[in-house]
Image (cartoon, rainbow, N blue to C red; front, side, top):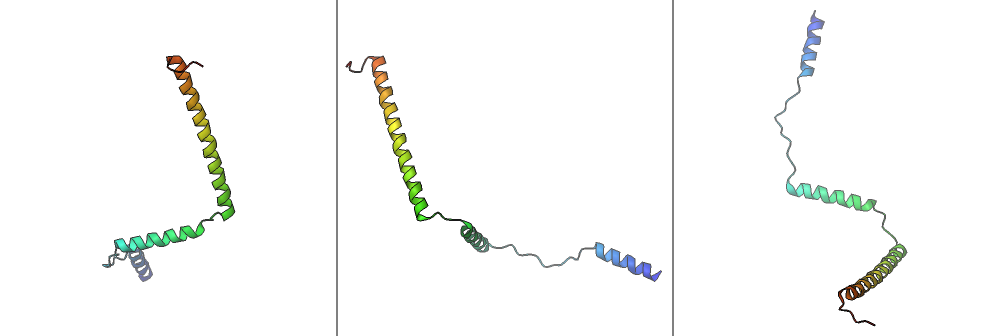
Length: 94
């Protein structure tokens, strides 16, 4: 009988969550900013940066594509302008 009461007391104690009057402090703004910056630094270390040769190669490709697209748009603009001149009758007839 005494064992049953002890078991009941233990069960009832385990059901109760220990309430403490200690409140968890929320981190202030500066702590949040510091935590964010530390996390950013950790993420930057994970990045695999391109080598100089890879960067130079990619730069060359970008410049080549810009030149080709520029020439294409220039030719298209000139051709459409000439076509519009013929349709509107404002172009010089050669």
